[in-house]
Length: 600
Ligand SMILES: [Ca+2]
Ligand SMILES: [Ca+2]
Ligand SMILES: [Ca+2]
Ligand SMILES: [Ca+2]
Image (cartoon, rainbow, N blue to C red; front, side, top):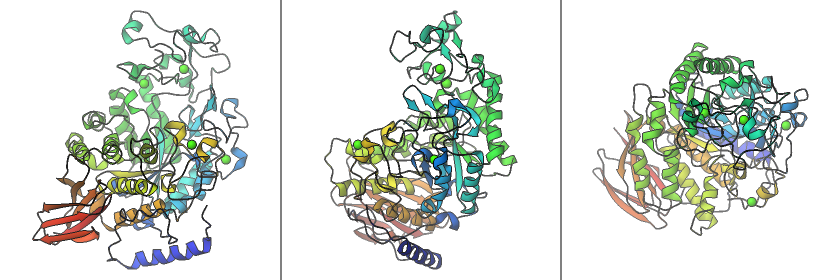
């Protein structure tokens, strides 16, 4: 753990802020990705891009930098709520900070306390994992992640009170930051049981396959072969609002095998799959989420498990919720869905046919994975962006997609590097992470930083293994990880603003703020190759064109590009650059990138 003097940070931060406020044409920063020193420098800079951008109510979504956080694993600001509800048994308990599958005590008050930490990193928007009241315990783990909702109208008591949530949003808005909720329309907590699988009391296991209640197809159900669905005694009114307690509003076809129609109609490992084909359910769910918007006034929603709900539901739900929010004065209300698939052809159907404004760009994640972890050619990335035209329709396009390098389900980019076939030094891992972040920020789409990535978190895998604590952890399998860029472990407090990756994100955020075309510019391909090496593209607006070149190889690489403009000046310097009337030759150090700008 590096010692940290708060007064020094504050003084340096203030100075950096003053400098950034009064110098429009700063010197081009050093090439960030090429300086992959493991040792962190003592310099602590801050990038408060949230306060320099337009007011949050007017701000275009393409100006955002997201931070995706699981509040339970972030910071415990109030230990009195650690055990959840004091009045509702179903939402009580499940607290065990030594287990990676249980509540750890982090909450909304704690998150609010850390807003300045996020703001200083250049974050403008926070996306929270689901915060509605959960079933605290299911089987041998708990609802710390928030995806087991019982009550769609109030916050989970482990995370705090409705007022705490309103206070967080008010505090974020005060800093000109936005707050996004993660919502689920596909399923609720697991309450409904099937007599054929779970017995008369719902507590047995009679299924043929352990842990899997066999899926019954639509055809089987039409022929009368269906489950006897029921709610076990004592749980008849456990869900809110009340209509969710009637089994007739669920599909009740058993567990999804993730194949064919079961992906839409099946239960997600027992989680009650809501019958989103029923018009009464559609209006019921629309009312629920209109209510959430009216009550808390978030700036948008990330929508879970979109692929597991019928498309007709989304095409009605999405515009209705956005219109409702706009009617409340949240003009820029924005929703992006989780469609776990990496092909633009399929992903784009949700923003076109499904009327959704945006989706999480699993295709870009896959391109970054192929080029920087599997070491395929840079054409793996070019191929992803070549599918951008699929997203084009009258009200949305690929520039509104939400990009990321890893997440709470698939694991962190750092873990993927660890798990790859290559033996990689810490310096090279850091260089690959920095390059993936730069490509995420500077290519089209809205970047998301997964909490803890900025502190060098790695993890042993996906899901629970990737949901480490930022506050001192008591989970042994987290604490034995070798974090990148620091001597700290997850047993320490990890809000280190001097961490090399935190500082790198500060730099990216500052560049993002200083050059509007890097956020809004139209992207066009320039160069890619079938082996690791250079990847080049431009971002252009009315004023300027930016040439962004990345080197994914571990050797120096050089290439000449014939550009339409001339006079490309450095924004982030390459190792060497020469130019003759728009014929630009760039020489890049291993695993680095450069940005050059030509004025129109
Ligand atoms: Ca707490
Ligand atoms: Ca479903
Ligand atoms: Ca169930
Ligand atoms: Ca471990």
